[in-house]
Length: 198
Image (cartoon, rainbow, N blue to C red; front, side):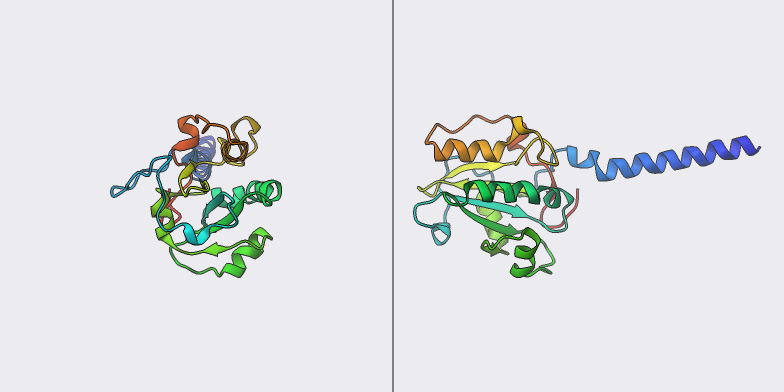
């Protein structure tokens, strides 16, 4: 009887651990579901309303961020490394995609330890076809979408072979043809918008 109770208790405990692992890890390895009303925006499309973001003929890099999304939080250091490396040649902008609007621009800048422009406008995500965080979108000097997608195959942005956003920046700045990316780069992974759900 005592042995059976221990086996049952261990089974319940193991099931709980597996459920937590699924919720906090595996669920983010699945693509983010495409919203029903999603309007795709193709690479090369002219993006309306981005003239206000332009800066001295620099490409503009939009970082779509949700402070409540674990994937977005894991991505902060990687994003900061891009700003440090390319900040003199690219204008970086943070677009906060938090449905509750409970954060200020100053709070976001403090979170990143960067003094970058911060916007809280969902329409920016719609213009780029972004429906998940974290996501990167880059426009070239002609106001055309050069890249929209993931930063890396790895949730923690540690896989150097799949630094998709960095590869897109290198390609654009070196005036090469648009790199060809796999679905791992272009299919959204992370937290659904407008709320941090998966």
